[in-house]
Length: 324
Image 1 (spheres, rainbow, N blue to C red):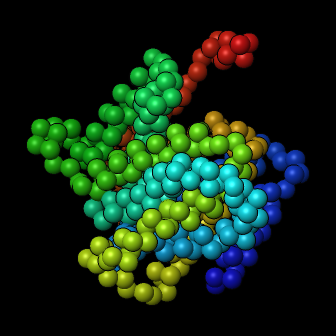
Image 2 (cartoon, rainbow, N blue to C red):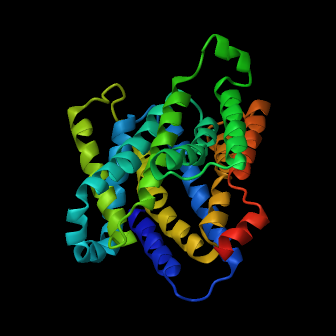
């Protein structure tokens, strides 16, 4: 089974790396495929809560991811070795946020909240990106962004209060929702750091380096046994779940996503990512029997609407930027 999964990933790498002209519709399909794979991450996290602890799940996910990406990215890493050493502090911080902490917090959050909540809160990351970009990159915050942020905040409040905002007066929130908010902010900071990636470091070497560094920083917590509250119950289902996370959610989706960006651009591909809760909700209902309630739909619409508003640029403004 593992061999067939690796063969599938190899085929995808060869296909996505093709220089042949591809229609924009294929770009959207690649972006959708990557988003569907990522939505499965939340389903696996929820499904594995009784069989493996969060730290162990994150650790073995990245072990598999490193092994799978190694043959494809090792040549680039060797070529960029001197650049990687020079920028090691940057790489370590980026790996800590995007690999070590982000996904581990998702798995911790999955113990006390459902897959749909995880995905809905996850797509609030772009709002944190706007805030961090202002603080650390001095990016301007437009009126659209302010309105978008406010809309997303309302959506998140509705979500974490289970459709009863008055509960804020009693502050009765699922701890998993709060962990997921922290995870979303970590991913946002990781994304800000990605914008600062040194040009001399190629994408493949960067990806492998952050995978390995993130795994190494996670190793002490795995060995220390801080997550012994849920001893691993190894079985075929758990093994396939970890292979899915390592091969598909950590590697194949990266290839698909980058191919999508090459065809349709980051903005259009990014809009597809906001459909994440739709796929997570459907998969959660299908595989975990999680109920989709009216407040899920309502806050999902609010969050997605807020992100669209925050990213909207009037046509006149686009023309001005183009002329400049």
